[in-house]
Structure formats: C-alpha cells, structure tokens
Length: 460
Image (cartoon, rainbow, N blue to C red; front, side):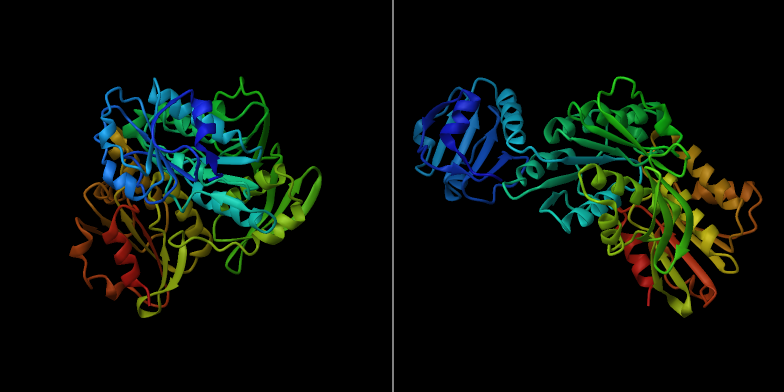
C-alpha cells in the first residue's frame, strides 16, 4: 500500500478524530473482522455493531479505527490507537476505495469466465513481469472478500495489476469491479457453473456480464469470438474498445494451424494482417484460447507482440491443470483436479481425442458441484460425451458422478464402467487396469482433498 497520512484520510472522508495521534501514516487497510489484522500502521473499518478488542488493536499500533459507532467510551481507547468517527461507515469505505484506486493511473486487468481465469491471469502476469512490476491476485483465491486487500497491494512501484473475479452469486463481479475499477476486462468463456447462486444459465450469463458495466469509461473489453454463450452478452451499451480472440475469422487475435508440440501447443497468431509463430506451454486448444486472451491484454497495455510471445514460451503451466506424470505400471497420469465443471470436462476430453489415439483411455471423474437444479442434466450430458468416445474404462467417484456412469450405459458406451461412492473405497482395486499403454485422466473438484490425494497416489 502507498502510505497515506492520517490527516489526509480524515480530509477525504470528512471524519472527526476523537482520540489518538494523527502524525503518522497508514501503510495497510482492512475491514475489521473480515480480514486479519497482522500489521502495524493499519487502518481498520469497524462497523457500529462490532465489539472492538482495543487491546489487540493497540498491540499492533499505531492503528487507525474508522467507525460510525456513536457511543465509544474514550477510556477504552489505548495510546497507540487513533479513532476517527464518520457518519456512515459504508460511505466512508467506498469513498476511501475510490480515493485510493485513483491514486494510480495504471492498467488494471480483471478476468472472469467459467474456465481459464487463473491461467490467463498468470500468463498476463508472467508476460508483463519481464518488463514491469506487476501486482496480481494469488492463485485462484478470488473471493469478493479478498478484493479490498488485493487493491491495497498496489503501491508506487506497481506498473500494472491483474485480478481474477470470483463468482458465487449474482452481484459478486459488480462488487469487485467497484473496488478494482478495471481498465481492461476479459471474459475467457461462459459455460455452466454456479447455477445454485445464479438460478439458471441465463442468470449465470448475466452475472458474468457484470464485468461489462464495471470497466472504466474508455476501457477495453476482451471477448471470446468462438464461445456461443459469450455471444449472448449484452454489450451494446459498452462505451469502450472491444477486442475479440479465437479461431473465428473475425477475431482480432486469431489462432490458426494449432498443433500439439513438446509440452504445449504450437499455433500461428494473426494480428493486424501480421503473422507470428507462437507456443504456449500446456495442452489443449483451450490453452491456446487462454494465450490469445492474455496476448490481447498485454498488447493493449503497450507490450510489443514479439516480446510477449517470447515471454509466453517460458510460462510454467499450473499444477493440476492437465498435468502429465508417470504413473503406476508405466501408465501416464493426467491430473486435472484443479477445477471441475462441464466446460473443463469437455476441454479435457478433447485433449484425449488428440493425444489418446491407440492408447487405453481410463477416465476417473468426480462430482461436479454447484449446478443447482440442473445437477442431473449436466452430469448426464457428460455421460453422453463419454459414450461417444472410445473409452476403455470409466470410473466415477461420488453420488452425483454416478449419473455420468448411468447415462454412459444408457447411451451404449463400450467402456468398462465402475462406480464408487467414495474415493476411500478404491484402495488398490484399479491397479490391474494400469499399464504402459494406459492414459489416465483424473478430474475432480478442488474442494475434494480426497480426489487430489488420490491423483497424487497414482503418480510415480
């Protein structure tokens, strides 16, 4: 955080100092009881209903409490704590966010999408880091409550920031955009997820659409030209620049001649009638899509494309994102236990279509969560996808995933199908299936520690 004098904050918020020293600077800001207070020189927004632990706050002093409490016993306030009273804490909070964000005239990128958010964010960070000091959200820790601390991570050395949007319910992205005030917004794709919080697919698309209205005036929106649901976004009122990426001929950042290479994907990038040979680590056409979105963003920020492409080659693909490893009995394990939704399952199956010819394909699929009333529908659709492929063995783990197995059977799958209610029930019962011709894809939700550990146990 850029240090800010207490008196300057008072002027911005129109607050009243009722206790404590003012001749010091704030170096961190949190919302009391939502975030951990771990640093000195911290600002804490405290609701009028909060029971304040004055002793703990003072120990990490100097501390600045901003509150709309009307009845505060001044005898409770200790020497290392400054208290500023405001009329409305909510208004003070948003006024401070707006003040702080506008201290920095830098590009701020935010990313949403059903799949590829974290990868695209990390690609952008990696490419930019070769030239600038970049601040970014951590891994896929993208919950709305983290947004305020992430914003406070921007300081005078920051030349660009990249954040990932979390979406559990409608309104989440709108809230985060109010904090980040992005200059560039990216929607990687829109599949099916979080229907329990958005009601249905239409509600989910509208929730993703919140990023369109959250981009600063004159900013840039980057969209997937190949994605059918992205075509349903209402972008007519967007007042800024729109960049499309994909394999579609109308894409501004277009990929052609996509092929599997050693450890990743080769492709030709077409931009402004110029062609560039490019490579992105990580398998699948969806990885090329992520790379296109990331390249579009860094180019929009002023990075020359050849330099960005050179940096992209050195990107290290994330763990448990179609991660290849040697497995039991000489098999090959593909660990894709980072996330689990219908879009990512389909992407993983397409990778198997390309690299699995002549191999013994074994699928291990876990439950897909957060599908609300559409749970059975989408598990059945995955079962149909499996039935249409030459799969040696299908293994489902979990009550919800059973529907995948049932539908595959109904559709006449030739696969050997095994159903387990719990990953703990498996033990060594699958070992006889694995040999040097086996290509084993294991896919489950990141919330399932059991699936993650099971994937690890298959590796050698």
